[in-house]
Image 1 (tube, rainbow, N blue to C red):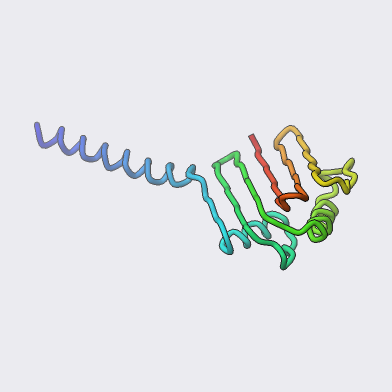
Image 2: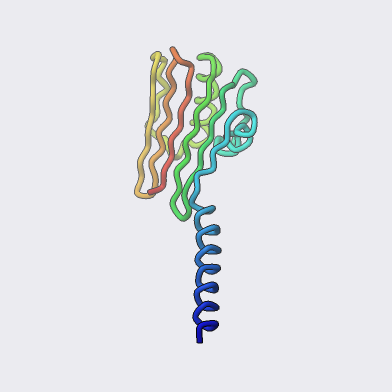
Length: 134
């Protein structure tokens, strides 16, 4: 009788451990920095990053719904052309966008399924993108 109880307890712990590892790994944020972040960032934008881009940061987390946080550094002249190229590529998502030449600008879009916010600060030279689908 004791052997049966121990066997069920051990089996339960093994199943719990397996589920914890699998599910926990799926929901853990995936964070990339430096050069290893470059490929997922280019994958998100769908266009090549300018050679002057530095300080890459990419974070992805979620399962069915997800969140993406991207940060990088670009000189203002490259940021301007890069953002224009990206917005042109996804024009349907940003039909009312008008490019601003202010020192700091941002643009966000929200629909029923997602929210995306793009901002660039000329003083710090930081481009940030935040996207979530929940």
